[in-house]
Length: 386
Image (cartoon, rainbow, N blue to C red; front, side, top):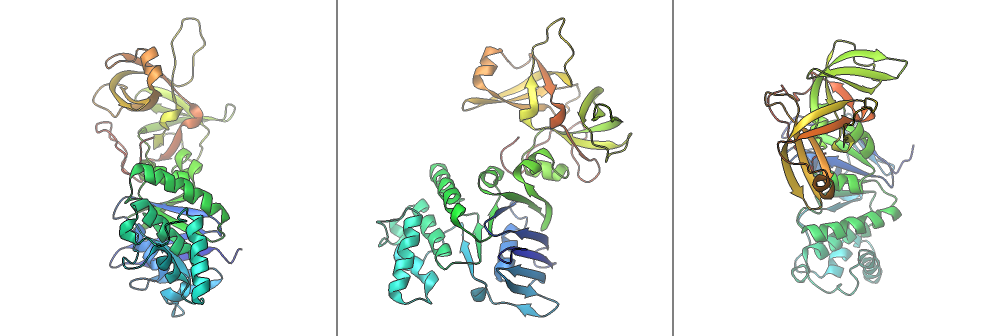
């Protein structure tokens, strides 16, 4: 076990419910993802030792920071936490260099300036050291804040919605810079964000957080392909979430057969759900493919015919919804290149022939979270739809 890692198991009931068991290895970035008000920032404050003490245990960097049963609560200033906030939190009367120097007050002044200069250079702020915050753009202020957080050689880096206050172009530049910088860091880093796409780009693992609880923690690929339940599926941006009945498990073909709206679909073998059970299921939009029906060709797996309900251009892509069966049931969602829509002459009201990739269909418990009652459309709560 690497003693530089962060490991915690904490709880509190008031003022905000918090129940979290998680770990973050040295050099790893863990994204805490959830909607506004889910308790993400409260979790970071608890880790940093800010606010009311929580129950449980927090260890990081070889130190015991909190053990409520033993009466241990290490003061914030002794935990060695580097924090970056949404609103920068720079001292307005100090220059960029002086702001970073505040993180290394234990060093002689000459060494403090040298350390601050090095970190400002690493975040591409060379030449702007003497400017005050009011003379810097939002992106430049956030670079100074990041340099200040790292200059003191922290045991843990906490990033609380650090890119929310900057424009999109600046945000994408900061993404690239942070992705490059973190390769050289050997401390655990926690990124709090409500933006799934941001988390997918920057983090090694994602922790889905809601109502103060960890719902699922896994790699980005695992979360997208295998969400624990419908709530997680929604929170990571899935749109194609439905209900079905398990018909049978076929060991010879390693497939599970489900029935959805009178249509038999096959998925990869998922025997944890017994035959006859009602389940939820999800398929990413990227695993819904188009095909052109032709006489004489062998039957494709999981063919579905829908009627195009809506076309929404999004740059060089088009978001497509297709109604399957009648009665106002939630449609299937696809994302297609604009040239494909044009070439295939896909238009509202026309039939759309689709095949649902068996390996893309993932079954989930049908009773843990309300998915659909085949009457109301499903919408994403956090991040971009999948």
